[in-house]
Image (cartoon, rainbow, N blue to C red; front, side):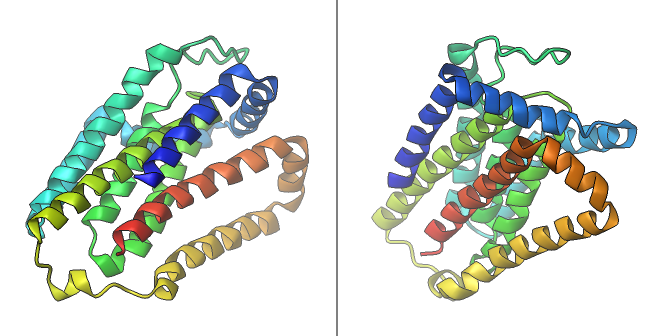
Length: 271
């Protein structure tokens, strides 16, 4: 519940910074310009494929699959929690949009006024968080890393296509994280009331050290991948980074936030 409260407060702060402060507006535009500058024939095709994974129909299929997996594993309460997170987080995003809609113009890229928070970012992060709940306890660290990478990939894709501002992504991640923590709090409470007996798999939690191995490895893979890109095209990469410093910082912040949200839920359900 504390985590959900922090997430809700961060959501309000993000909105205020993006809509009511000059610094936030300039940062939003600068980071977005960096993503848009990556556009190209092959990049746009790949970005469309990745972004469309979280369109309504694919999202519904993936969400239903997570519910089915939870039921197959004999965890009906988790299946119900997954359905609640997917429904409530995405409905909340759609309810917030008209309440805070305001023009944020980027010449040449008509982003709609009702773009904050991002529905695609909410969908991607809610799927990632529900996958953590459904996964076996000892597999949750690696699922958290993969889920965060998935949410980041979808977000980077639609930012490159100029569908949203970066602050829309942050808002979507926070909505999904807040609802996931709220639902998990209720799930814990109902399990405590019912005095559920869990099997050995559920009662023997992994050590904190082993839990953090997967996230550390994920960060290492990301760093190595960035290094390889730099080695292949050093001049182009360094030149682009110098011209778009805000983009580099913003892209890194989005990745860090995705991992932080996934890790928060994973560490909470670890107990």
